[in-house]
Length: 90
Image 1: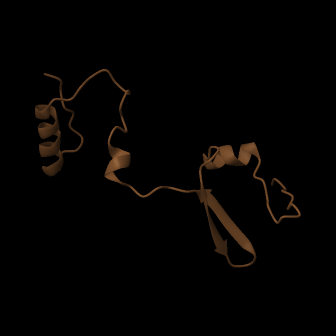
Image 2: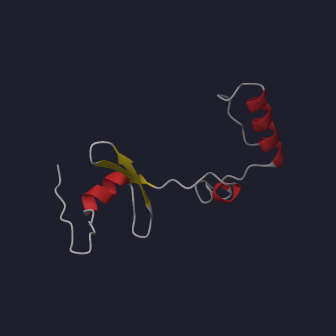
């Protein structure tokens, strides 16, 4: 278990390997939960899901562009409960 030192300002620096384990990069925030028995829990802050965060999420992941027909077909399959189906390119 890593041991950390508290500075005279009451601060603790998490080592690079701990930040990597949390999946935290410089400038990102962490959530801290106070637990019983003098313990705390630290985890990477997860921003609330917003449409702004969703738009463009997969941009650049493929060279294929979905048509409106592709999107309509995918939505219809989802509403029909057939989420395992795939949408084929025209």
